Image 1 (cartoon, rainbow, N blue to C red):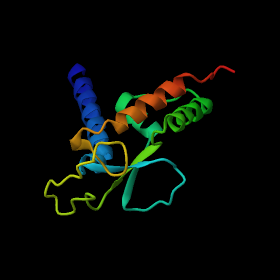
Image 2: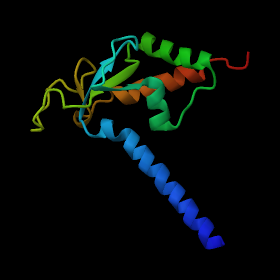
Image 3: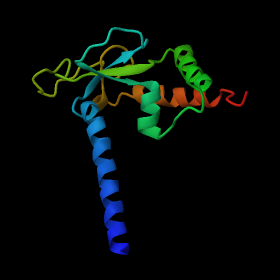
Length: 141
């Protein structure tokens, strides 16, 4: 009986891990992204969009306690001039459609096309600022 319980727990952990990898696969498959300063832009099936709230959950396991916290997180991003999300093209790597490893020399400057591989800190700044802003909200009242 104990052995069956352990095996089930192991399968549940493996299934959860697989689901997490599959959910993150579009982001891991490409090395560049475009910062989004509005979440109201047009949508396209070619783009994988990761909002600041999604990033906070994905990177830090953080979930805002209330709607006011979500609003405060996005307000903090706008006040800091940071993006509210990032988008990644799912069909090709922008700037390197043939996957030759080319990168824009300005690809980690916080403006325009960004590259994970060039050390862009923008996604981490976005997530950290969102969490800090969300944590400042009063969800009790």
